[in-house]
Image 1 (cartoon, rainbow, N blue to C red):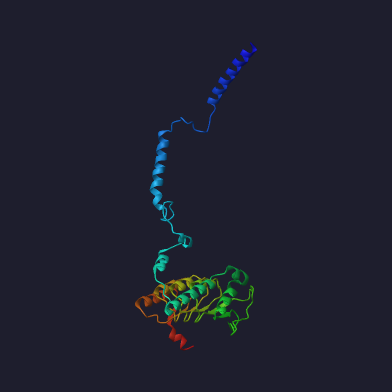
Image 2 (image 1 turned 45 degrees about the vertical axis):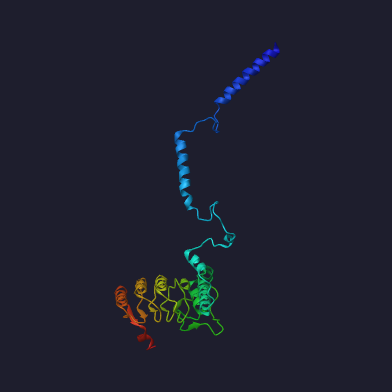
Length: 284
């Protein structure tokens, strides 16, 4: 009798256990559970969108595309210029080799003239600008000092190698230098600068002049742009130099646009005078 009672009790507990398990919530979907119409529609739309966007995968990166083993040497940042260059035949003529060497040297010099924050932290803006110019063959004059500082034949010059509050740049001569747009970032925040010359700097253009006009020279009075390729567009940027009094260019009347830009600049920065370089350099 006890054996029969234990079997009935086990059967009752089993049925209650199955009933309790059926009522408990579960996160796993049941195999026979039907998906709602909304869920099916969203899944179909996502699948359609993925199929439509397959064209965005670049050719050669899709699994079904054939790839050459030379892809290991490909450039991940290929542009149309790079593709055109690769399609050109190799030219080893002396002229092409000379041009290649010149372009390479220009890239190196542009890189060397880039702004170095550490140099300005150590020297300050004034001495950093003077070091930059003297190292490249220019000259600098400091406030309350009548001397023009230049580098010697060995390239050495006597200037402090750390910040000194007594050195304030009053004038800079960049004549005949190879000065690029990147290097002009080293000539900024010169509060006492009154004279600035870019005479015969062949690498100077309107973009360089635009950077000079925004170089924060609140006291700049004389600017020499003789011997450089400057147009009316570059000349118009100089309205940002509030105390400019004398501007020297090769010929302010070389074109109607140049003459008009000079006249408008004189009106905006009165009493500014835009004069031809010959009238100044011949007397000096």
